[in-house]
Image 1 (cartoon, rainbow, N blue to C red):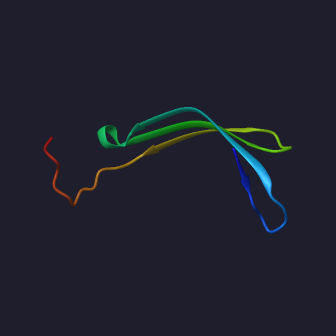
Image 2 (cartoon, helix red, strand yellow):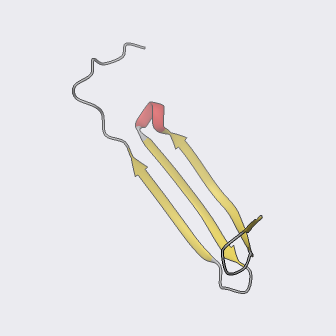
Amino acid sequence: MCIYQTPIMPFEVCVYTRAVRNAIEREGVLEMDYTVELRGAQAERTKFLMRVLPSFDQPKRSD
């Protein structure tokens, strides 16, 4: 929960995390599921999926 200051007026923002999966290093994937609620407005649920492609101009790491 935080207060977001705007030139017009401040308002309260709440972010509720439902799930986070950080597999960037192993699989190149980041998944997030969260809800953002602004005081006096309907809450919005967001599901975010990011896939990172390998860089082809760099040598592969040996683990």
